[in-house]
Image (tube, rainbow, N blue to C red; front, side):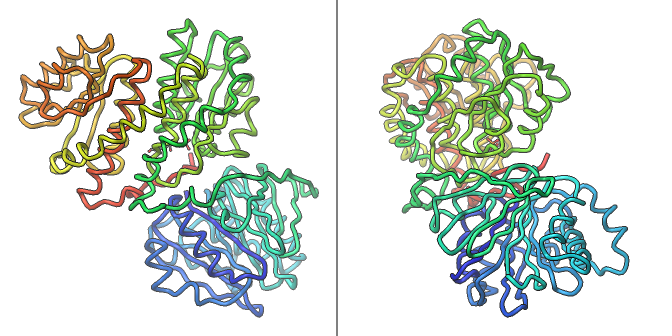
Length: 575
Ligand code: F6R
């Protein structure tokens, strides 16, 4: 939610920041802005719209200067308009600031700022004015640290001040991600690593409540009490290419195709220590949100099969219904490792041992867990999670069944990707519909939920998923002539019961589209995608690939940009 980037060095700040904003756009894309400091004066350009359009209309890269900040917005406080876009000035343009998060005490803080003139409706602007106020009495360092100490809620902040003779970048974070990029003679900060990948591979993940001051020659980090502190520098071996579209029209399509390659990397991830912990506990809670919740659900089914008392929880509701104690192992699954709902739920489980499954090395989730499993799927830029879902499943399968069982997985994914042409032919048919249903049974149900989420998220067509047996308990009333029912029908123990559900839907006129390796099911379907001969254990992987492709191609057919679905952002760092 919102992307921030800051730069100080000898390079052209506006160019580096504009490029970085393009790579951060998945975090929010309703407005964008940039501010550069030169000769003790700020130049600020911002507007509503996407990074590409606004940056070329306002000619961001013509701005001169070697220090600056940029922001791409996902609105929380205040409508989408130029004034509410970041960065924000104070009254006298001595401070400029970009913020991601929610300043929960902003109204209270605003009341104490008599005489200050506000230009936006945002909670963020108040921070610029407090900084301005503190600069009247204190040095720039002290003024910034004092400003941050007064803030409640969540924030990742990057600020500059004309009062600072050394021209440095002031940054802080709490409950919103902010990472320092350590360069040679230059320093960066950004909400996520891909924004800085072209310039450095050395990063520092700030801890909760940390503040830092960056100059071209180095950095100083302060802990929440204002004491200077060292934080570990990590080196990532991500190739810059993984954060590029690489010839594909969208990140989502690239990432769907990437699955064939990244799955091998995921299967090398270290899972032994976590497995030892899992074996020790009888009661296991798995917490996650969105797509990751569907992995959690699958995990809970597989653990229950092994005799564990396992339950998956939607992270945002865990505080109301979960009762974790020291006898409960808590596993949190989060691609980004920064989802506020997941972090909040993990903190709620304070008495429990915790395992994190994440794609993001050094992310907050890894720091509040006892053990971490990394997905090693490479950065995922498309807002709709694809390759990280299959990676999460692969990790879960490795824990439950062992790596050997997954030896044929890469080949299976490659074969399923070959069905793209058939999927493309079905897409125009679905693009005209207003309702779509997905049905499955047993362990395939979480895959149906995930397929439905993917579908509605990027096609804006209403979609629902059910265990097939549930249709007759209410949903059948919605199945009329021509309504598409997409059936996940591998030839496993669920098929005979699912066959009955297909007939129930067909009898009401449903248009059955199936993904199956059963010739009979294919025959009674309007259209069918073929699953190749494979180990039945791997069916969930075979099912999800064509369904991701289906969501993608229907989205394209409807003229939607699947990488930028409306109202959404990739990393949801507000509760
Ligand atoms: C959907 C999607 C979201 C995320 C959810 C959790 O395609 O990507 O539903 O799965 O916001 O994100 P993480 O896994 O980063 O915690």
